[in-house]
Each structure stands twice: as C-alpha cells, then as structure tokens.
Length: 338
Image (cartoon, rainbow, N blue to C red; front, side):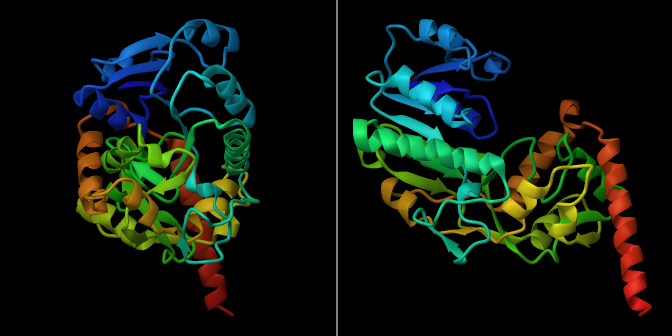
C-alpha cells in the first residue's frame, strides 16, 4: 500500500508514519524536510505544499492508495488538494479538529453528528469550512474523503495542560517544581479528554485503505475523561510536588491582552469535552485507547527531562502567571472583606 503524508512529522502524525513504515507500507512524506530524519525508511518529496506550481510538478505522474493531509487549515488549501489529488488517490484523509463541535455544548456526550459551529475560534471555523468543501465534492464528484477529528492529542515532549505560553509546557513544569501556583480555568471541574498519540495512530491506521471509512467523518479520542484538576494534580504528583492551583475565570483569561485565549478557552478548553467513540470502534474493530493519562504523562515527562531542546524557558509567560495569581488573590481578599 502506498501512502502520501502531507506533513507527517508532527505530534499526531509522527507515530502514524513510524508505525506504517514498520508495517511495510510505502510511505512518502511531502514537506519542507525539517524533521524527516525522525522517520528513516520513508521516502521524501521536499516541497512546500502551499507553492501550487511546485507541488503540482513534484506530484506529476504519481498516485497513492491514501493521501493524508495534516497541515491544511483553510478552505483554499483544501480546494488546492482536491485539484491535485482527484483521480490520484483512492482515499483522501483530512485532519480536522474536535474543536469544531458546537460551543458551548448542548449535550454532554459528543458524537460525530453533533453540530459544527464555534463562534469563538477562527481556527475551528476554518476547519468547518474545509469540511464543508470536502463534503460538497464528496456528494457531487464522488471525491473519496475521510474526515478525522482529533481532540487534545499529546505525545513525547508535549503535555496536555490547560493554559500555557507560546513556548510550550516547560515553564509550567518549572512552576510546579518551584512550588508556584499554576493557572487553571474556571474551578477546574470541567471534564476534558486527552489522547496519547500512539493510541491515536492505531485508530488512524485502521481507517487507511478502509472502504467503510470513505465518505465518513469520525473523531478519535480516548474514553478517559478527567477534570483539569485531575490532569494538573497528576502532573504535580509525577514531579513529586504539591498541587497548587490558581483558578481564573475563562472569561477573564479571554480578556487579557498578553495572550489570545479567546479561542482556546471559550472556544474549547472551558467546555466539557467527552466523546462517544462508538463509530471509530465500529470502523476499526478492536480499537481502544490503552494509555491512561498518568502513563502517558510519565513517558512524556521523562522525555522532556532528558532532552534540553524541550526545556525552553518562557519568562514572559511566567510573569503573566504571577500577575494573574496576584490579581486573583487580591480579588479574594476584597470579596472576603465585604
């Protein structure tokens, strides 16, 4: 089986690529080559997919059983892919996002038929527009699309935390190690679903070349739902430090000028996210996410602690956290004095 991955070396896609190569798939990565050394055994096409002429030339005369698009974020990019791959693949898999589901939720359990609308996050609205374009060509031109909606997927070197700065999770780890409060949206009791990337990969591979998946939209997540308090408490326990939360209303976070939290908070993490995975289990018999958060977090933490390139200081975010902690403490004192 021949697969083309556009991207193929990110948090979600890298475990998929590695597993396919190990299983004997003929895998080609189309990207700019920044991380292709992470996947020995895969072929490469060095090209920026957004350079339409270069991409068309690089793909001339090629065809694939599966094309998986991991780095398309706008309707225009999807329209380009439709032109590039019509008649050249038996299945086109588009990576959408579970953040596209309606916010706020109208039902505590999310299914693939839950409405797609997100008034708070342009990223999610763009993904919805991509899906709508693909459904249009599926229905009118028989384009062989499968839509996959990941939720919060993490892997080695990444942690599924509620609030972080522009440089990743290291500064939050540092705050925990230094016994400083960490910011948690709301009161920390909303439910959130996180998925280990290797588990996601198993389900995704089960969709590849799967005739029953063509024309379908499906989310892939764990069945384990935890509160933000539980998630951050597990981080503290893994680092052998006390759990010291600072609760901040999501609406207040969305108002800050230092970071754009409107989309990621009000359009995603401030809401409960619990998924019905019946459909992926039907399409991929035997699939289940096997890695609990405490297990995945320990693996990821060990990787971070042993790799200096993952230990990126973020003093601006640390200062922002200190400022928010001070604001919330003063607010508590003022309310107590009423």
